[in-house]
Length: 146
Image (cartoon, rainbow, N blue to C red; front, side):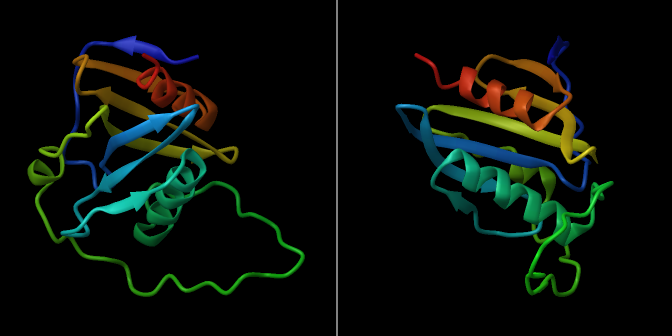
């Protein structure tokens, strides 16, 4: 279960992600994701797309490293390429906001095929800890309920 805590964010984390939600309807959402390894945002069209986008980002920068590796019947082509280099300062990453909600997120661990970390909900000025990907999803969803 997530824990509300005092508003604090470590903007020096290499995997800091700014999730800007611009549209939400009937449980679906879309928006932009900013991180310091790109000058342009990555867009997502639904929640599953967001989860996959962030997980692929963590794999590209090798942080946080996953404690488990998925198993496949047919192994997909792995095209990670060289580790990306920082393109913008973290201060620039957190300056963007979503039309509906903004979540500054830092996943600290990827253990047991789940995420553990912290999220700062900008519009409310509140920080939360989450101990699973499901808790992360519930926090994002809570920010979009009118």
